[in-house]
Length: 398
Image (cartoon, rainbow, N blue to C red; front, side):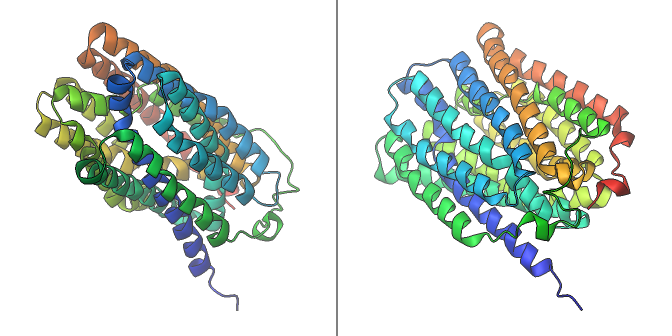
């Protein structure tokens, strides 16, 4: 009788989770301090923040498509994952040496290129490790570990700034340490079998083909929602606009990611139990309500409450969206499907962030947040109307 594969696959999921944890410790020692660093130290404005985040995410999205497509044609996905994490770990701390916002743009671009190389193969690798009935929980666990790193990173940054360091640049440079640790854990801790051994359909030899039409429709609705989803850097800028002190911003970001981490696995498990689309619909409704709240908030205490509520959106959607993409994609096209998903929403991130920054500058933060909430409501309505199309058919499952 064959051995139960669950312990081995669970170890693989947990190891990938720890890699995400360490990577986000590195990334989020930097990210919550970046809006202030750009606006106060480098004299950039809200529009520049939108350009930096939008261009970085969107350009990297092309690589998410290519890396997912290429990983379907290799016997191993791991080399692409290692390459992506290594590039990001090498360039991310260089923000500490930047002299103008153009250099920050180049560094953020390179960082996101690394993410573009690794993300689709990593998600496909994770989907390969677990059966469909545990897929939502597995993605929820990976996202929870990622978010836990985004708790520890800002807390570490706040501690360093409060008691040991005088400026943000030193914090940025120290972010190299957990990034290097993540790459080493990935190289030595994740064991991947060749694709020909792990796939009953012979993934390497399987013919390429177009993605299912209902998966394309789903990605289109995700793109519409992404047009409402500007970079969270604007939320941190809004927090300071309302009166949250600079040294508290990393703590606010840690609190936000702590709620995400605590609710990530329950959110993914909920998607396994009640369905992916129902869970996503609930998350998108939370997003619209949170953006409406950010439009009218006037006190720091209100900002803290809104960040906690907004975290529920991520807990409900991050695992569910990835699990739904995996459900609708044939096994031999899973890397391509994740590439299309990540690339499409990434491309939409450019106009979303740039336009949000322009609206903020022209009409103020209230109007910008209300426009974002309105687009989110429209996307939620579209997903509700077409929700029956996204029930996975038996032939789509491995």
